[in-house]
Image (cartoon, rainbow, N blue to C red; front, top):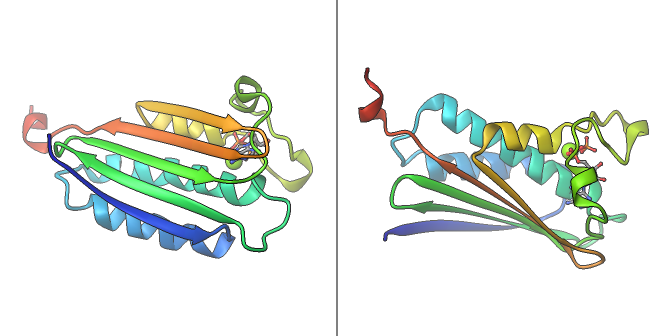
Length: 148
Ligand code: ADP
Ligand code: MG
C-alpha cells in the first residue's frame, strides 16, 4: 500500500477556507483525476471547512481546525476536517437535508447533503464540547479506464 498525505493546521477563520481548498486541490492534482471529480472533492471539502468555521466555535479567538488529505494507492482520496468545538448533539438531524441550526443567517442546511452527493462516504464523529471530525472519502476513476 502506498500513501501520501498533507496536514494543514489553520485558524478557524473564513479567510482560510479558500487557501485550504487551493492547497488540497494542488496536492490532489498529482493524481490522474478528472477535473469534474476534483471539483466534487473541492466542493465537499469547502462545505466541511465552512461548517467548522460557522458552527464549531462561538468565539473565533484561537480556535483551530485541522485538515488532512490522503492519497492511498493512487486511487482513494481520504480527507478529514477536524475541529475542537462544541460538537453536534444530534448527528442524523444535522445531516437531514435542509436542516440548519442557523436559519437566521441564510444557511440553507444543505452542507451535509452536498458532501454526501459528491463523495462516496461521509463519516461524522462528534463529541459534545470536544469537537467534530468529518471524514470524506472518494475512489477516483482512472482516466485510462474511462475511454469507452
Ligand atoms: P448549514 O451549514 O447550512 O447549517 P449543514 O448541512 O452544513 O447546514 O449543517 C447542518 C447543521 O449541522 C448545522 O446547522 C449545525 O447545527 C451542525 N453542524 C455542522 N457542522 C458542525 C460542526 N463542525 N460543529 C458543530 N455543529 C455543526
Ligand atoms: Mg454548512
